[in-house]
Length: 132
Ligand code: CO
Image (cartoon, rainbow, N blue to C red; front, side, top):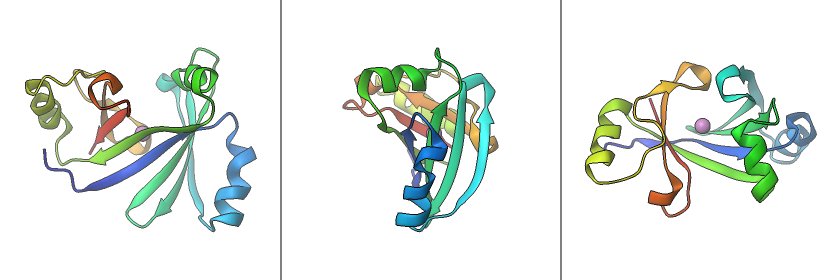
């Protein structure tokens, strides 16, 4: 697989507005985009840190996977996303290496990116996203 950089780190929060002061006033990052991803039942807020982004994820529904994650593990780091030139190709590669995937085919994520998730069971407990 041809990973170029960490595209973003996803962080699960109950409420984005509550955490904006930390990211903006303490870390001095600027929130450049807030977006709702309806099919994932989340609201996202993005900050740039060099080439990498921080993506805050707030559940918009109680049956959102983010709501379930927070219920089970509390707020905190949810996933790490690697940038690859071709998600479909990277998925085929990892599947050939017996890595369990959540998405068999790429789907649309925030910012119009093609994304796919690998299962934490196969990745040492880290929910891993590939995106292009
Ligand atoms: Co993500």
